[in-house]
Amino acid sequence: MNNIFQTAFLSTKQAREAYPLVRLFHPALSLEKWLAFARRWRRMLRHRGGLVAMKDMRGYVHAVFSYRVDSNLRNEPVLRVSDLVVGRLPGRLIDRALVESVERLAREIGCTSILFELPQSREGNVDPSNRSALAKAGYEPCAISFLRRQTASKHDHAVSAV
Image (tube, rainbow, N blue to C red; front, side, top):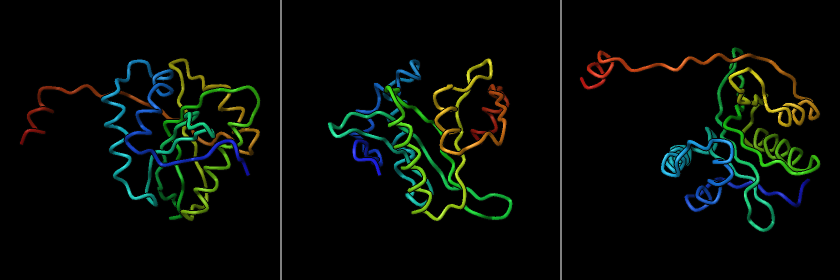
């Protein structure tokens, strides 16, 4: 058990406190968009999803992640962890605390497995610190995701206005 870092579901005030860390990793993200994102996650029932921060004893935010509960093909509950932002410190303490908090959350909700969705660079690289931390905790790569951003056409706007 870790006594240095504590997890907390983000309130409006805590979302504001987490913004400088999030902005380090997403510099184009405005405060308004970040707070809107946090509000959407806060509306979810905690057994379905949420937005979590890891704070130290002084109240400084060192990591943020979103989670949601999905089902796999066998209809077993899966905890999906996304939007992971971790402020790196020397050593592995933050990594261990993060994994422990996610695993505790999965047990509380009753999930049979955990899936971390780590962001990639355009070149396909995953942050080596995140990849290494999860590998050391016994996680292994299990999927490759592909993304294509859709552009709205004039027809799309007309249909959505109906």
